[in-house]
Image 1 (cartoon, one colour):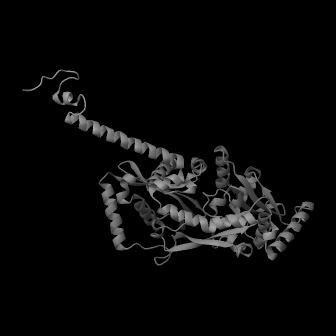
Image 2 (cartoon, rainbow, N blue to C red):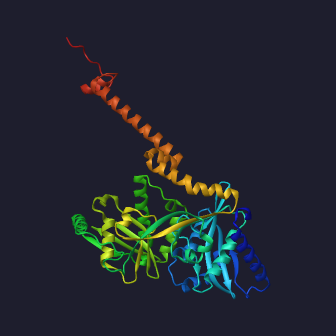
Image 3 (cartoon, rainbow, N blue to C red):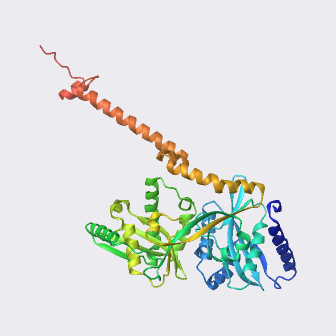
Length: 443
């Protein structure tokens, strides 16, 4: 592993290795890092640390990570959990939830709950020693056995990991994107994008059209109704993705739905929806933490799509406001249905650190090959997209389609023959006589 580390990384790793060795003599004398593979071992301390941090970090919260680990185990896809914990004078001061994923012969260390986790970050107590604690954690990350690549996706600029870990992350950035957001406390000329009169009038017209199909009701889903609302939102999202041939690794992961349902059963989400004539037509689902709202799921009924119920729902949310929400985070990547509402965006970086020669190969795949394959997929015909998603299902659908067309053509030809009297008993049925009746020749 150390063959591919630069001189500074070698020095940092050797220094922390000595520190960790000394810590074994007196673990309460100086900061020490530990590897945790069962979240339950430190759950209480994790909850306490999460309550002490001064910033929003939903995807590093114990309820999100623990629910994901349990859902993966139940789905037969157990996670190889690698939680980095740093203690100072016996107190937990840092948690970095990570996991190892295997891609064929390669092993990749990434944020726990990938691909559902949208931001890679860590929980660290506010202190002048935060950078030192992250340095100790980083050394243990690099020392993980059997890992070829450390791949940290969507690290928010300004996050604790990016600010205090810049010394170790600089030089390893492999991609940059943005996450659109709304500052709901901003002035009119701030990050809240002001809609033009023409745009507002269009929304009002669509709302009027919706009202012709029944009474329009905007409502907040109570905790007792969150499970049912979540199931409906995921079903609508699935139908939408299938109709457009869109893939989402997060939604398709077998643990994703179970994780969300576990959180919904405890009322951990904020859900709003529109009913038209008593029928739910659009749902917005997110999570709030310390005034920061994560917009996680937006779904709508395709039969109402001409009137943009999802856009109307967001418009109403922003017009009404919520005193408990200061930042509305649309999450990466930046897409038109997000950027139309937000004038601001925070950069998000992806970092890749190869710790073996195989790591350079898999890093090349993430950095160059995977984006090109994705571009080809988006340009491919619908059938080829389906083959890429599920080859067996695509072939079955194609075979059923061919069978259906052949049956239709056979029936059409048979009906034509029957009507024209060609071929056997067709003439008898046209004349209204039963099959086998004698017909006297005419003249």
